[in-house]
Length: 152
Length: 177
Image (cartoon, rainbow over all chains, first blue to last red; front, side):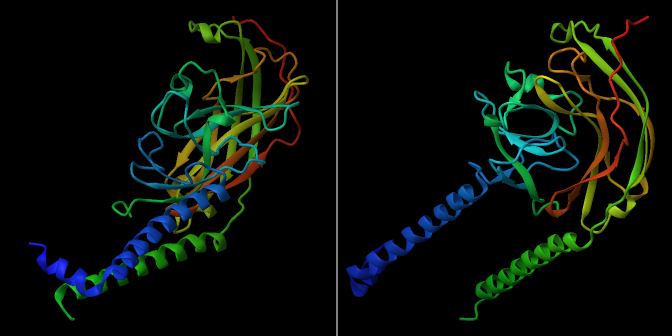
């Protein structure tokens, strides 16, 4: 079955096979480098996310792409759309900031409350017992948007 | 060499790169098609009451109730890459000891240009409360009308359409009748 292929390998030689493997590895490595590099530039663990729920409709539908940044020196404002992950919850949530309470003494220590545009109530039920969302829970702020090709 | 598959491959590659270029052009066009509409935000009344909610979390806490009116013509913000506007009214106030606060009181999603000429008299949709549960130490509040332009593709932009001229004090708490 593979006799043809084996013959072709023998004709091309061992070095050619090695070269192919090297090529393949470099393609994978450069993909990984781009992803991690983006993560470094945007200071976000996952700079591109896919929307998983309908709680921000009609702005974001399931499957749409969001581009995030998380500048460490910038505070979050009301109206910003954040992606956050509560410890213990499986999936990150994309919701808008409704309230911010900045600590006057400690810089950039913020307590936040979020809400999905399509939800009636705020997210306090989603925080798994936490009273407020904090900066350490936030993956990033939504800066750019692209709909999935189906809805485009 | 010129098999049907290679032709399909070439055509689809060309189509997808044209698509990407078009999307990029549309996203960039949003930076040129900017507008800075201004409107008015007026406060009708601010009152502070003790919460009487059955929920334990909100017990023994003061809530502020704000009546306001908004007039703003946000139609210039609609262009070919505007999917919707998210408009909200926000209160910003300091607590003398602890924190700087910003709380959204009211919001609206505007999906059509025809609906973007706002004339609203309303009250807060969301609870206005203080971290310390009392407005006793809260300074006067600035109120503002802000918007977020959400595109079909590209960058989300934010702006402020109106702001109250002078900060407004929270009145002392009064009992419900």
